[in-house]
Image (cartoon, rainbow, N blue to C red; front, side, top):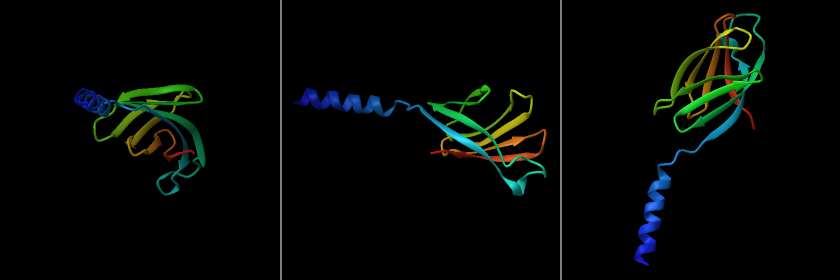
Length: 115
């Protein structure tokens, strides 16, 4: 009985330290109050993944970037779209509160999780 309890306790502690991978889709929706005139209402749908402290984003054109995420989940990363637009993603990966800024056009988008 004691052996079973000790084994179960060890498995619980080991399991508690394991990172859980999570993948979700998010649609880029225009933040009108922060954006220049002429921005598209909706932009890409991104597939976002957080595996431990590794975050990656991809869209219909493929993988955009993969970065390490600090413990607090806050990121700010510059990247280029497949079409050459200079983009920046910022916010908190762990809370899924993320924005994308298109430097070429002055457009801000909130990444709204789907589903």
